[in-house]
Amino acid sequence: MTDIVSRNPAHPLVEIARRPASSAKDVDEAARHAADAQRAWARLPAGERGQALMAFADRLSREADSLAALICEEVGKPIGEARAEVTRSLDILRYYAGVVLLPDGETLPAGTGRGWLMSRRYPVGVIGMITPWNFPLAIPTWKVAPALAYGNAVLLKPASPAIGVAQRFAAAAQEILPDGIVHLLTGDRDVAEAIIDHPSVSAVSFTGSTAVGRSVASRAGARGVATQCEMGGQNASVVLRDCDLEHAASTIAAAITGYAGQKCTATSRVIIEDPLGDAFVDLLADRLQALKVGDPALPGTGVGPLIDATARESVLAAVARSSGRTITGGTAVDGLEGFYVHPTLVDVRSSRDVLVEQEVFGPVAAVVRARSREEALALANHGSYGLVASVFTADLEAAMTFCDELQVGMVKINSATTGADFHAPFGGSRASAFGPHEQGLAAREFFTQTRTLTFT
Image (cartoon, rainbow, N blue to C red; front, side, top):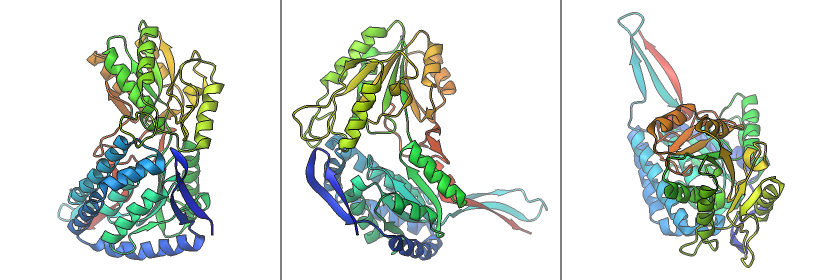
């Protein structure tokens, strides 16, 4: 049986975790066990499920520091960002521990005038979850927490570079929660497909690339299984002429380079309204050049490594294919052991440029010039993605216009494209998402099914 191995992106010879790949038999046994356990879990009073989620959060909180260190070591996330991810994950669990006590339906006027007509939400059953490596604790948490809160069971298949964090998460869940409610399965495409295809799996939640997400949705759809896919982004930060330039430059630089740009919400395009032009480009380049690139475990590091050598090669190849002029960066970092790329800004002149149309997933952004606000809006809506956009302006009317007209799932005014409130809906439109949004109360649209009840 093949082992799944994760390594430290900052020190690639250091092995972090090892686990045997799951077999088809493992998937079958886990799915059947989960289906049996889910029925008893769903019958528990909602308050008891909430108490279990609170206990799960308390269990993880006791190892918060070591979890943050593991995130830093396993996926190369700067330690400050890793700590924030742990905090966010605990907040999500505690949020859904309370959400379980919200109304689970509504009453309606009965057609007979004397009977009762109502709707109630019920759990879906067993949920297959396929999660990425870039938020190895937060993304599993924001899928697992609402699924469990609403009475479902879970089969979790994490990305192979993040199996160490997944093992810690699953072990804590299995220690606190009833037997069979959370199962960890590791492996590659064959394991994911076995989960999607299993007759005991009632729904599939996926986060990852658009190409893989479409494949997941197609495969699950062929079996009539509900699917939720959060996929790629090619996100614009629009800089209008009346904004606070210093704030915009610092905020956008962080949104380009946070976790080395390995976020679906990272800023990939900076659309600048004339006459700001070169003055803002120079300011943004200065902010990027000031960021410290290095070991993510060291204090003060702003930009850590990419996840592996293949990722670094892909980022550098995209920059090389661009027809634009490189303003800063565009090369690998010499003298460091891991997979580092200098923060990169490229001045492009074509809307068909690779850095405008494709998700690069690295600390790279394209600068695009706009002659007016109307052109800036059109440029921001260019392309097939629609996850998030930010607009920097002091004009309330302009801000509201962009909120109304941007074809994205999330709009930020004078703030970074990155980051999300765990109690608000998260998700995109167009090629960035398929199915209901995640997080907040929006999660119940996917993790529950509505049943209409009539009493006469």
